[in-house]
Image (cartoon, rainbow, N blue to C red; front, side, top):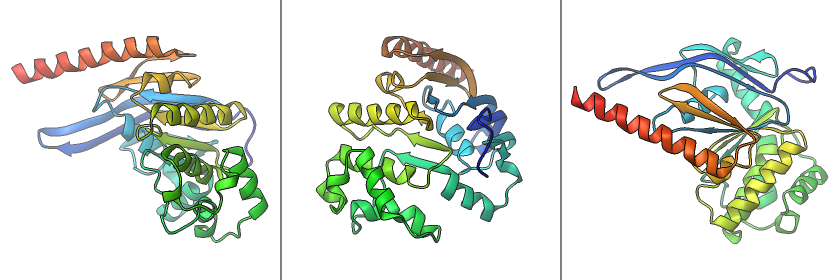
Length: 258
């Protein structure tokens, strides 16, 4: 899939829809979402519980098939791919960072980081891996196991693992949710620094402080993009989220009253 023209966005989502059967009928998790993520752009996705944030992340990352619309990674549509090819794209072109780290406890840091390459049948370049660990501040912990690291160090190891394949885009799902304030700040600073160096990133978060590290915050409500903030700050994000939560609670009360 690579290389692609410099002007091609890292991710393009068009009219994305996702529906499923719920207890009370069809649930419209996504309703025509539009999203472009440029190379080196860091986008935060926010919204009340049930707004469609995780569904959008999963569909954009090829983990979930949308009901309609399209997802393009560097100009290549994911919906045209079979399951085997889609799995290869996820291994080679996408990176994932999750709240729970998902490091294998029996492997060292460097072995965990190199695991995606080995699963793809490739021989890791040890010097390149060490350089990557140095980039995330863990080169002196390369031979340690995950239980010998702090939470912030484990998350940085997970970030290195997401980057080892040199992906087009990195998806992060609440990457600081399990961290203390100091560790969370260090991880967010790292993510922003990687974005400034050219790595496209999409992060789902509920934290206004985390969103303030992004270039742009996108707000979802009821499966739709309802607003966005460029160069967001934590206070503006918190105010926007408070309005959305209040509106979502009012709508829920209205439905319950019927």
